[in-house]
Length: 464
Image (cartoon, rainbow, N blue to C red; front, side, top):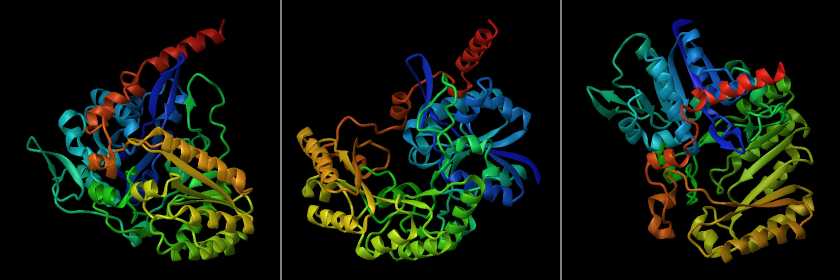
């Protein structure tokens, strides 16, 4: 190993609620594992650290102390979701003050979209990767290790001679890259077993929080999408803008299955989520994958398959064979209204087509769930009708396990934030600082002394 230690950090969002400190955005981006794997393969000692888990296990834990103890030279923080904005910035600010020599970069969709603004506002951030960064991160680590120029590292925003620049060159992972990357390796992450049992919300005041059964994980099948659902920050137009990706990359079925077997053998995981449906006109990849999953697991695992468009009978039949009777197809009509669905959703289908699919799923005894979304900028009565339509479908079809209703969120790079007048979208965040202020929480975030004070109170109470 090279004498240059690297650290990849997931920073949840913190908030105070009813006297407790709670973390949200607890699920880390899958790309942390592929980044770690590439760094390790190139000779860099690298660990993934989940600040929520570490702080829950030890309220005295400070990332700055860990960086000093382990001589970390390079620390990369994910800023994938806009809700992380404040905590990532404040944690890294505190780290830089205590560990001025550590090189700090950000990555992820939100950091990519606002890269220039973040570097202009926050001098403690040394660089930001715009878009995908497995190969660029290794190049950066080598440049820092060898004290070479950072020129020529693709996708890197950084400061050169006092100016913020984006290097020439673009890196976007192709099929062969995704097949080379590892997206699961429990040895890469500190306290992975505890992380695998984390819940959607983590209350630092309560005991026995890391107990969610470690049975359901999202599997990386590929990257990209051909759709442009208006609210999605990962749509085709958003991906092209943020990362330069204008095509879909797939991992081979063999790589996917190998990863699933490892998860099953090492952690007893038997529920797997396939949250990837980039092109409803060609699902040959999934039909092939389902056939191979059936052959490998003999239908004894549970598959959760999230669809953006409607499945045809070939896809449904292949899906039925690959998993057990607890497997679920998730469909997102968005709205009861076909006109609104056509305007706000890609991969359009009519209500008649939706109900015909549900009838076929009923016939095949396949479980499904529906997702309807509250659309901003329209009459609330229209959203109410969507909720009611979903509930009526759940009552009508025995194999529709639930119909969920959520308000749409406004996220960076989504189509409607780029064309707000078309969607009657008003009063939404357009800058990084607005997301930063909107999610303001504990001063110094995970470097806050609030946790330590709480730990001292708990310690005194136990000895009284």
